[in-house]
Length: 432
Image 1 (cartoon, rainbow, N blue to C red):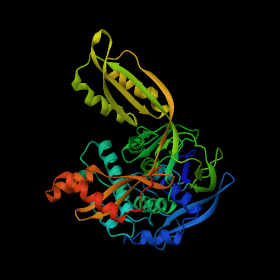
Image 2 (image 1 turned 180 degrees about the horizontal axis):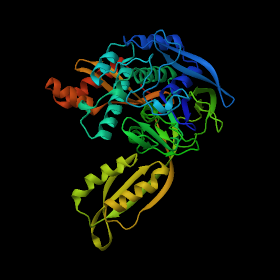
Image 3 (image 1 turned 90 degrees about the horizontal axis):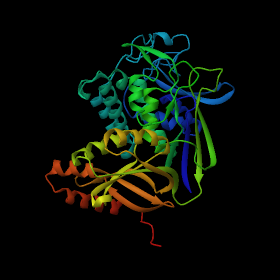
Image 4 (image 1 turned 45 degrees about the horizontal axis):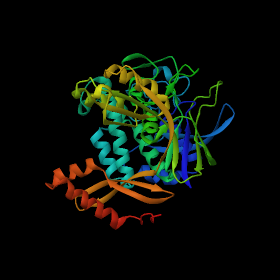
């Protein structure tokens, strides 16, 4: 049976809520402390306690500075779950007004990479953590229209963000889910104040990270989904939508700081088993034929469709009416992205109509594992059916990078990586 996790974000998501839910599911806090301690940075201590949120029992993850009685004010959000309810008006995303007990050290992206590399995380965990921090830095760079190297990494390098992201990576590996699905995210409502003025919710970095993901504004007039929460959910969830058919085996609740009267301020993780060999999901196929468009435009069209949430885009040559050669454009996507993707087709092509049909697809369980090879670490995408490996493919970008560094043909690096995988991997599934 494949282990599937459904993350219910009806009160948004933040890094500490993700960790609270993982601890509620049974993640040993001593193991989490050991993993965080291996970063060799001074962050104080982490604790977990039972709390009630609108009558629902949940686990609250807290970061406490050395010698402090109160938790460290969070830097990964504006006015959110983790701020004290009477102090949020003075908390800014870029680290101003942290309070006397908060650590003021911020770390660069390069420094964070060094901490991760010497940590006790697995090779896969290290690669995932570095990727998440890079995405967060890229989002900030895009918001401020500057190169990543010049981003002032207050948010990315704040200690609480480092603890949340690395802790979540460790916790997700402990959970060992083969599939993660998340609900649409409640981002909150109203406006929020930061160092650069008043912004509507979601805040700029959060909105950037949530591109292509279904979100909505709830009744609570405050920020509910933080940049770190958005980063973790978009980094781990394979898709967003309703809960798939599951036999639920465990439920974890991670608490935010505030206690709302409207609803429990918690993130819920439901762990269950899929009854079937592969994971199935609903998708929509959108198609149109084009015979009167400049061929140069098909390249940018594919980029626009992928940016708008397409799962796959492909072109096929067709012979159309009046015996004209044309191109069949096919877009596969989550059903909730159909309208946006149809809009891209109408805006970016010469078509005057599209057709679509919803269908089921079966996906193999998949994970990315990093293996050591004679040419350095290479990620391998591993696919399973019924728990047995049926395919393993070295990541092409990693092979290109290693080939460039070593002055080797790319096909030689692919062969080296495949051989290293075969020597280290479990047996493949038998035929039939």
